[in-house]
Amino acid sequence: MPLNTTHQKASSAMSTVGEEQKIDAAHRLGLMSEQHPELKRRVADARLELAAVILAMDAVDERIQAGEKIHSVQEQAAVEQAKNAHAQALADLLRGEN
Image (cartoon, rainbow, N blue to C red):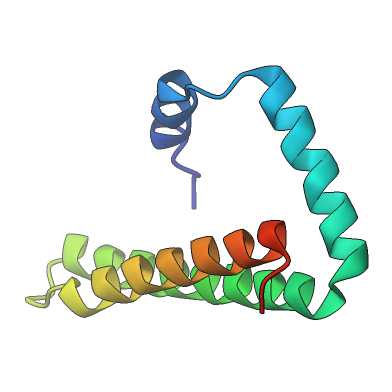
């Protein structure tokens, strides 16, 4: 299955974050990951959940393209929830908040 890079290119083109900010973020993530392994684990779990629901949505989309009369609303909602959960877990790690 080919990867969709169109969205990735559009996202990076719209970014307002500079290289210095990315370096600062990488440093902060490393530091906070060492100090808060439980929060780091929560980010990893949320990322895995997000990956799983994206794959589930893609599977439904493939079935739709094959002609099945189904919809992917539930899967789309699950992706949105997982994205929010991942973002929250990442913010908690960066802030060192439980």
